[in-house]
Image (spheres, rainbow, N blue to C red):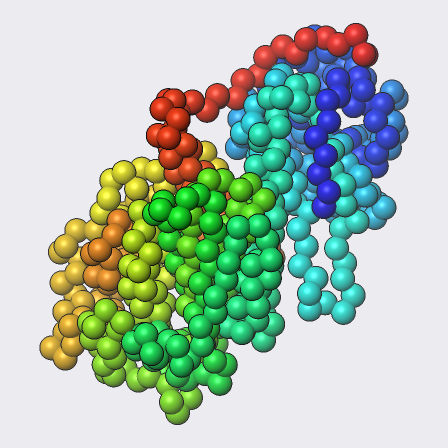
Length: 515
């Protein structure tokens, strides 16, 4: 989809030629009464009559409205005009348009005028919502039935206030869409080799370099844990190394490690057949790393970032690892594999050890790791684990600002007791209790040489049921975190304090003579 940011008064938005006009209506906003245009007058009448409430995501649609050039008009309530409510309203409005009887809607104008001087975060939320609503998976469909919507104009009263949010939002849309696309692809269309090819394609973008290691290189590195998981598959493993070089070579990078199990049968500890198809989503951590790098290429922040993706399948053939097997990780620690379905931590531990060579300022792994995290947090928040309070706070703050939420869980040493074994340095699972925490405690053993955080996205990376598909999370969270790191570094160099983000306000917009 092509995005455009344009200065339009409420009246000029009504006159804009397009297939559909979406106008966001605030609750108790003074701009609605002050504006003198057909939509504002209609909204005022509908509210007074009790036919419309400007609560978040409440809609009122009309056709061939007098004074409106677009044949279709949708008024969408945004409550207090917060980014969260704007996102909900835009998704609801565009879904109504997409799923309506008309199939020829190509251009939509989204008017934020009645929100006053829509700030950067509101504009970003609107752009991301448009991207979410317009994304459609088509790769393996013989007759693709994607929306015809291909151009969206964001109408704002103040271009300067909105531009930064618009740029950030459009950059994120590309990254989130890439993460969704690779998360959604069936395993036969997203093998480790194909995933590596997708990473190589990113190497053509500004500031990005990519290296891909195969089985021989991985064996030479001593990644016995990662290689053991891949043994049961005929698809060769790939270890993908991405570098975004946006700062001085002397600046320590942030390292992102994405779990890349392109399909997970559970191995010898095989999963139940029901819903096993969803195990194609077990590489959503890897997909999110690809999405972050796609966005970095657009936004070009002054920061260095490394992405590590251990990619393989977990299959149950005659060469597959068995419960009770002991393998040696790259760190030298031996691991007793009590359950072959706890394979994500086995590939991640070697990637975490590999991360040491970059002398990182922080390492964050992202993984669809445990069903226990889904039980604990559902699909609302990702699980966050870190022993470093500053890193944990930065990620929590990034989750809030990006509307891609996470929640910090404990890492008490007592949780590691269940990982003890008589036959190796550590077992790959403990008991059922606190499963998400014990998985994090396993990973923590391989992170003693750097500041580390773990994001368990098992509940947030995809949706099941009628809306089945990848969510593209936590690309937005990670990008906000990285931009915060870059901003802090820039402030340290310039000596200037970091400017606080302005909170969105709903206030009266100045009337324009252009009306």
